[in-house]
Image 1: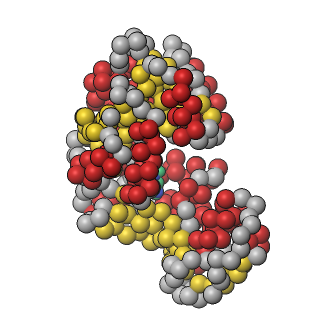
Image 2: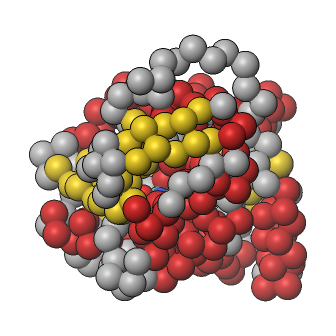
Image 3: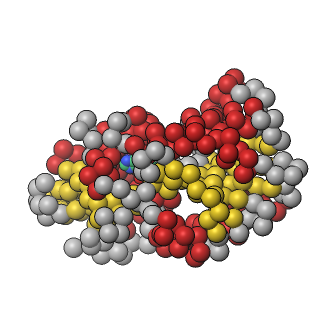
Amino acid sequence: MNTNTRTTFASSFEEDCYKGLTSYPKYLLSKYIYDKKGDKLFQEIMELPEYYLTRCEYDILEKHSAKIAGYMDGPGGFDLIELGAGDGKKTKLLLRELVAQKIDFNYLPVDISENVLLELEASLKSEIPELEVKIQQGTYFKTLEKLADFNTRKKVIMMLGSNIGNLLHKDAIDFLTNISAAMSDKDMLFMGFDQKKHPQTVLDAYNDPTGVTAAFNKNHLERINSELGGNFDIDTFLHWETYDPESGTAKSFLVSKIDQKVSIESLGLEVHFDAWETIHTEISQKYDDQVVNWLADQARLKVTNAFTDKKGYYKNYIFQK
Ligand code: AVI
C-alpha cells in the first residue's frame, strides 16, 4: 500500500489527487471535475429532466422575483454580489426585475475564471443594456474582504444552485462564517438549498439513464489521465450514487469493476484497486429548515425569509445578521 509520504507537488490538483488516491478509503475532490469538459457536462446535467434543481430554482426566481427584489432594495441602493457567475440564466430573471422596478443597484459577479466573467458581461450588455455590471475576478473570500473594506452601500450576497451542498456541514459552516464576517447589519445573503424529498427523486437526479452524470463523475479520471499522465481505463469504473434519507447526503462514487493497477506518471504513483473498491468523488447535501437554521446559527446568521417551488423540492433562503 502507498503511504502519504510525498511532500512537494507542482499544483494543488497534483497534491489533492495524491492524497486522495493514497488514502483508505480513496477519494477525489469534486471541485476538480470542472475543467472545460466538466463545465460542459454540468451544463448538460442542468438540462436533464431528472435534474430538478435548476428548474425549481428558476421557477422560484420567476414566481417571486418581484418580492425578492423588494427585500434586496435598501435606502441608497445596493450592490448585488453573486458568488459563482455561471451562465446567469436564473440570475437574469432577477436582474430584469430589478431593472424593470428601476431599483438603484450594481451587479458584481465574482468568479475565479476571467473568461466566464467576460462572456457573462458581454451577454448582459446585449440582453440588459441598462444594467451596471462590475465583474470581480478572484476567489470568493478575497473579493468579499475587498468589497467589505471600502463599501458602505448595502451588500446583497447571492449564491444559487445549491452549490453549498457540495460541502460537508463543517465546511459549509466555515463558508457561511466567512460570508457572515463580510456582512454588516444591513446586508443580506440570498442562497439556494436543495431540500430533502422522496429518496428515489434524489437518486434519479444523480443517476440519469443517458449517462451524462456518469460521464461528469468519470471526468475526474479523464483529467488525471490528460493532465497528470494517468492510465485509468475509464470503462472499468462504474458511476454509483447513494442517498441516505436520514442525513440527507447523496454521495457519488467511482467503483473499480476489476482488480487493477493504475499508474500516474507525474505523481510517481502506482495505485492498486481491488475489485469493487471505491473512490468517493462528491457529496450533494439535501437540507430541511431545521438543518439550515442550525447552519445559520453556527455562522451567526438568521434566516429571515424563504421561498420555495410548487413541490417544495428546493428553497432559497434570505439570511441576515
Ligand atoms: C454544482 N452542484 C450543486 C451539483 C450538485 O447537484 O451537487 C453538481 C452535480 N453533481 C452531479 N450532478 C450535479
